[in-house]
Image 1: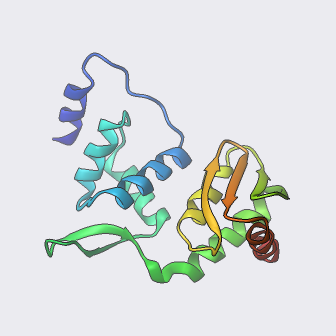
Image 2: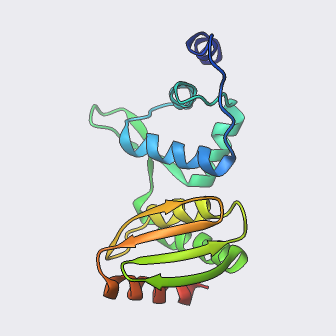
Length: 166
């Protein structure tokens, strides 16, 4: 049913191709900004953003991102990140940093992490899902993750924490 609606919405335009890390980043954004209650609803929202994905792909992405169902404002269940998953997220972050990080450099209020191609988004999603004191946000490309910090001191402290993980 969702697939048909998606095709109708994009009857005259092409669906864009997106790699799995960008797709997962979009899923994380949608779940954070909206009350997404079902996989079908998530599939529809992805479709509205130009992605034609199967339920199996969505299910894998939900599992990979560590999404869980929590109570929404109206009492129903919605997808959310499990706040208590920090140890699991840190473990995943440790593995990806040790496997994919090429270099890390503190530049004033920024931390520049160079990765093997295609890995920066994974690091960004994990960094965005945990609270790091002094982190304002992240911007990621294909092989570069930029962590924006509130001060040089906080950037140095976060870099030190990440270097311990690696």
